[in-house]
Image (cartoon, rainbow, N blue to C red):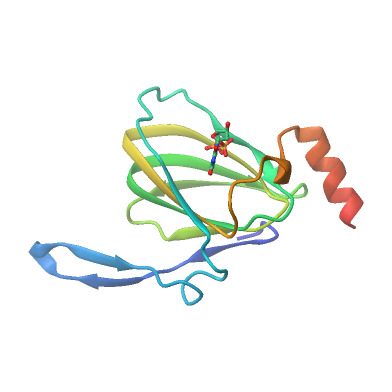
Amino acid sequence: MKIKNCKWIKPQTVEDGKDGNLVIIENMKDIPFNIKRVYSIHSLIDSTAVRGCHSHRYLEQVMFCLNGSFKLELNDGFNKEFYLMNISCNGIYIGSNVWRVMTEFKNNCLIMVLASNEYDESDYIRNYNKFLKSINYDE
Ligand code: TYD
């Protein structure tokens, strides 16, 4: 992955054949931060919905697609990559200062997000030009 402050997270899995699979995520082991918040995104009935369109100043997150699929765009201000997220994908760690856009929600898409801190609107940058300025400011 070319995107700064991002990486794939491969959780432990137990495959029980016809009885299904387990996916196991342990705090501070599989996830590189102390999980302070978990939220889900669901009921994405409009496949043209667009979510995200922001970066975070400090917040770290790990995103898993638990059902269906969606397209995730990550952009660190220099490189942009697209990933098709679904149940067989690993999670994606998204650190600070990464612009993310989520689109193309399909098949009853269910997303789980693990976050390093409580909700804080002042940690969001929701304007793309401000995001680009914040990247330059940091360098
Ligand atoms: P937002 O993080 O912008 O969603 P997404 O990145 O999926 O597009 O949040 C959408 C709205 O929900 C916004 O008004 C803030 C609110 N919200 C909370 O109140 N608490 C939370 O933990 C989260 C994630 C969002």
